[in-house]
Image 1 (cartoon, rainbow, N blue to C red):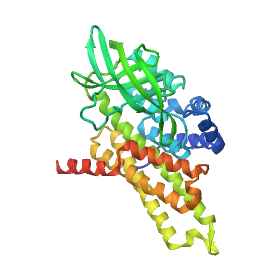
Image 2: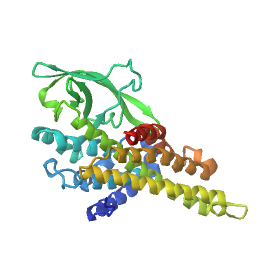
Image 3: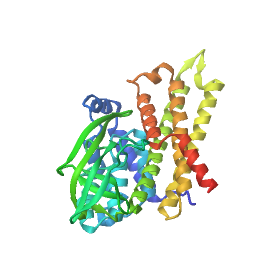
Image 4: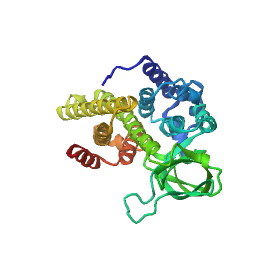
Length: 367
């Protein structure tokens, strides 16, 4: 694979970092948390105005035609800033899936407004009873000229701010992706509190949808495309979180004094930071490998699983190193590093944990 970054990646990354550094401050995050908000609408408008939301989408969706590599570069910056914006959910997964598999009418109605920042799209993927074989799953059955969709999705990211949900549902032909508008009769949205703060929601569906709400076919193709990019995007966000966490920890270790010298001069602290550096570089390597293969249309199941493992396992270690080296302030919820710890744990939980990924990789290798 080719790890060389493109000029577009570098420019979009630099522009995103400049905007996010200016806008995502400790005071602003505290203000949003106090208001119970997980979405910064003003920041979202700034990113849309700068062309960042539209840049990595097809031209048919109002974008510049760039792809997953550019999207991952922006996601890393979102992770570094812990930006309260649904770039992964609304742009990479929402508008991206519709632009790839949707009809021209769907692209005009949903993807283009999302690219302009006027519509937030939330992928609704997780069933409330995941892991429970007796728990009902969301189903879509043919009904007249359309579909009857029934079920619920839990911990829907950006669900509280979304105007459109991309819902995966079991169909007679496989797992299909359906566009469900928040205003549809039979849609219920209840906010949920997650590790890193507000913004998620549980969404219930008992709706009749016209045939034009199916994205692509009723089989597994769009769903597989969506899930692969969801995992790779989470790995990119986790890379940004871990990278910035390690930078903050190294800065603290250089400035914090104990026994007459910087704590970074002690061997045990230096070793923890060195291990963190290796973890971050492994996360970077495996994430870009998975993204490159996906973007080039190559088989990537093993590479995505490896990236998923490193994002969960490496992210876990870096998060705990950050807290341990910071000492008492590392567990103070008013200190900035607390948000990085919470974000890293949320991504780790969303990815499913490291052990599950190793088991899946073992199955792939054995096969």
